Every structure is written in C-alpha cells, then in structure tokens.
Length: 293
Image (cartoon, rainbow, N blue to C red):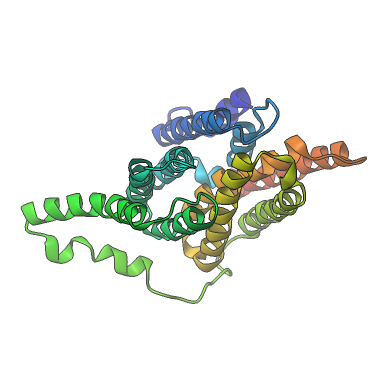
C-alpha cells in the first residue's frame, strides 16, 4: 500500500512540490498511526491494518493530496492521542493532559473548528479515562490557551492585537449547511466513508467485550472523537476537505478494527467488495479531478 500510494500520489505531476509535501505528511501520519497501535495494542492481533486503511482512504481522495497548512491537523490529532492515551490510570497525569490539549490547540491554529475536539477529550477524561479533576481540567485549559497566548504576544509586538483573532469569527458563525455546491463524487466518497464508519461502530459495540478493559476504554475515546468529527463533517460542508482529513484518520482506526477482527461466513467477500467500492470511488474522483475538470 505504501508503494501504491507513492506511485499514484505523485502521478498527476512529478514536479508538483505540493503533492510531495502532502505525501510526506500522509506518510508521517501513517507511521504515527502504526506506532499508536503498537504502543497501545488497539488491535489484539499483530496487524498493520490501521496504517494501511488510512493510506487507502487517503489515496482514493485526490482532493486531499496537495499540501496545505490544514494537513498538519491530522498529525496533531494522532499526537494528541499519544499523550491522552498515556494518561490512562495515571494518578498525576496533568503533563499528559496538557500536551494532548496543546496538540489540539496547535491544530486549531490551522483549522479552528478542531477546538471542538477539546470537548470530546474532556468527555473521554470524565467517563473513559477516569482522570477528570480540577487539576486535569486546568491542564487542558492551559494547553488550549498556550498557542493563542503566544500568537497574542506576536500580535502585540506587531501592533496587530485588534485584528489578530478576527479570522475566528468566520469559522464559528452559524450558517445553514449547503451540500448542493459539491460534485456527486465527493458526496459519494464522504457518504461511503461514513457508512463504513457506522458499520465499524456497530461491530465494535457488539464485540468490545473481547478486548481488554484498557483497550476498550481507549477505543471508546476514539469513538467519542468519531461522533464529534461526524457532526463537524455534517455541519461544516464548506470545510469538507479540512474535516475529511481528520475524519479519515480517525475512521481508519475503527474500520481497521472492523476488518482485522470481524468474522463471518461471507466476511472475506465483504472485505473484497469494500476494496472494489473504494477503488471505484477513487477512479471516479481521479477522473473528475484530472480529466473532466
């Protein structure tokens, strides 16, 4: 999958530096996902399905291949998981919580709606990680505030404090979602990913008892984030590309769990059918982006 990603990713233009930049961030994210699985045993079998699923889903979405600052949000999300998961059953885990929320805040500097994930993390700390108290609450607040405090200092130095944060207004102004301006191939791809995410969630809730308690609690953290990102994806269609990066990274963890551990008489056939469906969507997306448009 890594070789296939390398070939198809830069095929539209070998000299396009934005494609190489997007490929570098995607490969880094895939490596971090692999390490996240290794350190936390999110799959109870030895498998590279999580990083492979992420690469495959990113590969079929060519509109996400070019480098832009939003691509860093995915790295921030996975890095936040590293420190958040490390806080599980730690008596004094303020440092881990601070860094988890710091990564979320750093990602929000590129994509401000990512701040909503802080609410998902607090919910996870309260119910799954069981480490929510006034110290961890304040550690999270300090982590969220630090990047903006540093940016405010920079704005004061340049005498721009009155305009430094005006860009946040456009992100948090409520507007009615408008899906009509998106081409059918993008809507079909987003719908397919959400459909398989739903199947993965159903499978997880049905079979979660097979996992160890720690693995189960960490997976519930991912599920909580998944619901939050699904709401963002539905409520902010004008930010489809930015939200899809985060949604694909998070969904790949759940879909990989589904296909690595799922069983059934026709499950192998269903797995191959899934590959064909996403491959067909990928061909549709490539044709729409590079030939028709």
